[in-house]
Amino acid sequence: ILNVEQSPQSLHVQEGDSTNFTCSFPSSNFYALHWYRWETAKSPEALFVMTLNGDEKKKGRISATLNTKEGYSYLYIKGSQPEDSATYLCAFDGAGNMLTFGGGTRLMVKP
Amino acid sequence: KAGVTQTPRYLIKTRGQQVTLSCSPISGHRSVSWYQQTPGQGLQFLFEYFSETQRNKGNFPGRFSGRQFSNSRSEMNVSTLELGDSALYLCASSLNFGMNTEAFFGQGTRLTVV
Image (cartoon, rainbow over all chains, first blue to last red; front, side):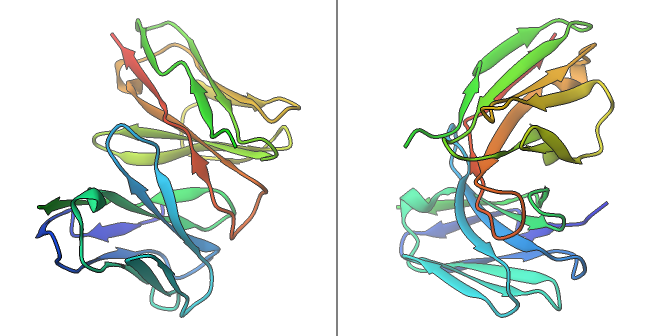
């Protein structure tokens, strides 16, 4: 059974704060690491698909880094906004399209 | 471009019954995966189909089955429903099988077993 862990489980921040979450995953049989944002009553939305050790990806105020050798990825949000409130999920892909999800980090941004 | 469509959105079934859920992927996508989300277990992989063939299967009992049609639409079936099958079932479509492939999720079917 693959172990994909995310921390923290939940996070409350003020509007304008910058924040980051961690995803740890197995360092062997690595294909890709996916990050998703999941807002209540909506579909999970893909943020990043990362495949190379040292990869850094950015989309607006959100960025992510990847370390496949030690098995972790960080997701950063700069200047959090209330609309960033969601659950952020990471998913480890060790076999091609078979995603093992972490438990998620629930982010709440207060105006 | 239409997204991933799952039907029905909500379903209530009785223990012992069977249920079929449907997923229409994004046009041109050939891979469809299914996931189950329960409060205690989070999102868990059920199976993945590519070009009508099951490529991967998660750790679920044989009561859970699926198939994919030539137009890439997929169905999953759960027979002899149990209370613990109550969950949100999500499907995701990808352009191809393999790494570096972004998966697009539908809104899910919420199944309640009573």
